Amino acid sequence: MQNKNWLIAAMICMSACSTPTGWHPLFNGKDLAGWDTYLGPVYDSLAQRFDSTRVPGLNQDRAQVFRVVEVDGQPAIRISGEAFGGVSTAQELKNFHLQLQFKWGIKKSNPRKDKKRDSGVLYHAGGPHGADAGFWMRSQEFQVQEGDCGDYWGVAGGSFEVPVSVRGEGYIYDPAGKRMTFNEKSSLGRQVIKMPDSELPTGQWNTIDLYCLGDTTVHMMNGQVNMILYHSSRWHDGKLIPLREGKIQLQSEGAEVYYRQIRWEPITKIADAILHHKYDPTSGMEFD
Image (tube, rainbow, N blue to C red; front, side, top):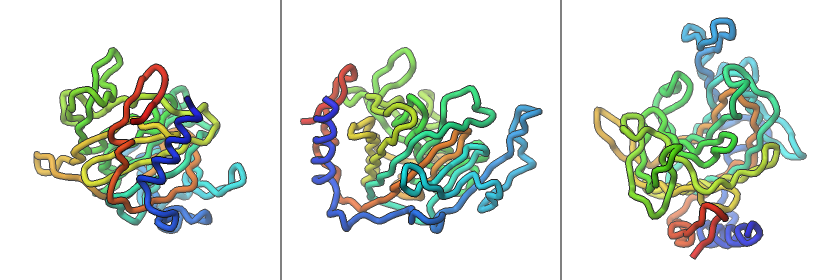
């Protein structure tokens, strides 16, 4: 099944993407040119809380929480996780296919030393830094967390409609389910759990493909669709308005993580094989 999925994924990429020359790098492999760093309130380990009076802020990363390193023979952005915040593109993207790879490092930092390794790929990000919990911009999130990669979170007002089924642990993506609205003001909350789980074991490189066209988004990892989301929007003046473009922000959230091969291409369609997929949560993914 896994080999079949990878073959199908390659065929999908050929049909959904433009030619290879359509790819544009977001990471030059040398430095963080074209990116901004932001660090929010410093964690006080003695008081066991974040100190809102100590905020390094924009492009003040003296501890090098974000830096370029070589790992497994290739350049990557290392995020130490030792402080909470993010590194974001100066460029805004609209109607795009984003592709990148990530793998977990070893180090874990307070206040998440005893919790799952956590990060996230935020997209359609905009507005002030630190809008969410003092650390991240308003955005939509492709969750990057051990065992939860591909989940959706609405960040600082981000909102989506997602077809779901209700299970004991929450709302789980189900293409045959009822579309429901998820955001920080919704009674349902702002999280949707991905299905299926296609994350590779910790320490291996995972490939994320994120398709955003109009107000529709596809979360995809390691050749499998994890979720399709509809009607991207955000809260503004007490109502939801369309959210269809913005920056990419990679989170630092207590765990060492590496990101590499970060690139994007403009798209005018998403392949039918992705949008009309079928799946069996017990055995993986199959396509029409």
